[in-house]
Structures are given as C-alpha cells and as structure tokens.
Amino acid sequence: MTDITIRPARSEHLAALRAIELAAFETLRQAGAVSGAPVANSLDALHQLCREGVLLVAFAPGDIPVGFAGAEIRENWLHIAEADVHPDWQRQGVGRRLMHALLAEGKARGLNGASLTTDRNAPFNAPFYTSLGFAIVEGNAISPRLKALLAAETLAGLDPKRRVAMQLCY
Image 1 (cartoon, one colour):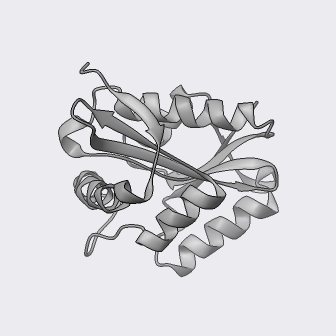
Image 2 (cartoon, rainbow, N blue to C red):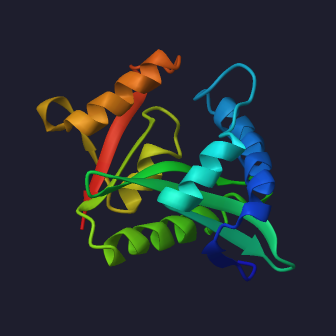
Image 3 (cartoon, rainbow, N blue to C red):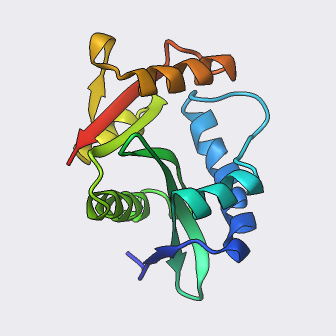
C-alpha cells in the first residue's frame, strides 16, 4: 500500500472530507445501501467533530486527503459517526488503518468502548466492523443511547430493517 499517514483534521481539510464522503456515497449506492441524491455531513458537523470529538484524516503522499473517520464521545463511549475512503483508495487498507487509529484514541482516553450504527446488508459494512472486533447488539442488549440513534436514523429516512447497532468494549 502507498505510504499513508493519519493525522487529526484541521479546518482547511474539511471541504476535502465532504468531497470524499460524497464520492464514497456512490460505493454505498452500488451496494444498495443508499438511494437518492448523495448526501454528506455539513462543514459545521465536521467542525463539531474536530472540536468535541475525534476526526482523523488519511493522507496520501503530497498531503492529499483520501479518507477520514470521525467519532463523537457520548456517555463515555466513542461513537463512530462517519468513516469514508475515496473510491480510488478503497480496498487498500486505508479504512482499516483509520479505524485502528480512531479506536486507539478512544482507548487512550479511557472510554468504555466504541459503538456505531451501519447498514446491515451492505457486504462491506458490518463484516468489516466485525473484523475489527465489533459485535452486533440487538434487542434488550441495545443501550438507550444506541436506540435513540437508531430512532433518529429512521426519522431521517433510513430503513430501520437495514440498520444495525454494533459495539466493541475496551
């Protein structure tokens, strides 16, 4: 793999991160995980992750952003809010490196673990997170925090039958 470096995001990177997220939307569309017009986090949401959470960027040589992963800290958990790799850089280990760095940051902060919600059916989502140590949580095992996030996703138009909560304890 090309030499990739991972560093915290700065304000000047945020527009490039939105462009990566929009490009990665097409990969999700091809897998049937999303439909409609491409959407991405707002610049304000990315700024908030920089200030209040963790936002890491993968850079290719020449300081070119090729992927990012961001998380919020809620109730002593690192909640993965977004992780995207530009399609030209997918399947090269960039996402795995970003996730390892993000999880290490949560562990270094003394958090309980990490959580996320994702598409249940996309062939590269839940299996990828399982390979990192995440497990699906269902039924009574879903915390009120994760239930609220899943409910908000439903209100935003995501199909609840396709959504799944996952977590990893440190």
